[in-house]
Amino acid sequence: MLQAWPGCQELRQLCCLYGATPGPDAHIERNQGGSAMTADSKRKPQGYDRLKQHQGKGYSGMKVGRSHKWYYDQGEWRERKITPDEWEISYQTTKRRAARAPEESGAPIGTEYNWLIVSHQRVDKLDANSYTTCMEGKKFKVAHKRASSAAWNVSERTQRKKVIEYLEQMIEELKAADAAEPLPFSVGEHEHVYGLNLRTKAELLDMAKEYGLSGTSKMKREELLEAVKERIAQQGNSRSDNGRDRDSANDSAEFDKRQPDGDATELEAKSKDELYRLASERSIGGRSSMNKTQLVHALAARRQRPGSGSRA
Image (cartoon, rainbow, N blue to C red; front, side):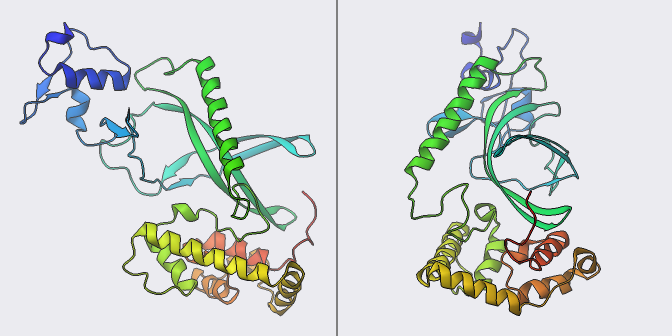
C-alpha cells in the first residue's frame, strides 16, 4: 500500500502533480538527505518538473516570473472577413527558442498544450503588399496533454468553462482600468511601446539612454521598467497639454522636414549600422532592439503620411 511505503508523502505529491497513481512496481530511490526520489525527480530534481507554489497552489513547469524568447518561422496566416469588423483567422508555423534549452529541461517531447490567446494586433501598411505587425496580450493555459498520455488533462466541457472564466476575468480588468491611463488593446491617445513589459534589462537600459534618463545603471530591472514607463507617460502628457490640434499640426510639419528614407528594396541594401543611424536621426523608438528587417520596415513606414494609405 502507498501509505506504508518509505517516502510515500513525497511520491504522493509527485503523483498528484502528474495525474498518475503509483503502482506496486514504482521505483523509489533516496538521495543523500534520505528523501524519496522517482525517476523523473532524480533526472531533474530542481528543474521544470519540480513542484512549485504560487498563491498557495501547487504547479509544475516554468517558474512564475521567468520569460521565454522565441523566433517564429515564416508562417501561414489566413483570414476571412465575416462582418465589417470581425474576421476568422488561422495561423500555422514552427517556433524555435532564441537560446538552446538546457539539458533535461522543459516539457518532454510530445507534450501538447491548448492555449487561449487574447491579443491586440497593431498593423501599419507599408505598401500595397506589405504591413508591419506586432501583437501584445495574454495567453491562458486551457489544457495540456502529457507525452505519456492519450487524453487531455481535462474534458472539453471543463475547457469551455475555463475559457469563459478567463474572458470574464479580462472583461473585469478592462472595466476596472483607469480611463486616464493607457488602456489595454487601445491606441490613439497614449504612446505605446509594444512588448515593453518583456524587454530585458539591457534593452531597457538602451531605452533609458534614448529617453535621457540618468542614474539607471544601478537600477534593478523592475525599477528600470517603471522609470521608462514614467518617462513615456510624461512625454505623452506633455503632448496632450499642447492640444490635439496643435499636436497634429506639429506632427505634419515634422513629417515634411523628414527626408525620404527610400523604399524597402533600397533600405534592404544598406547595412544594419546604416539603418540604425537613419533610425536614430528619425527618432524611431525601440530601434535598439530591432533586427535589420524590423529597421527596414520602420524606416519605410516613415515615408507615408498617416491617413494616406489605402484601406485594408
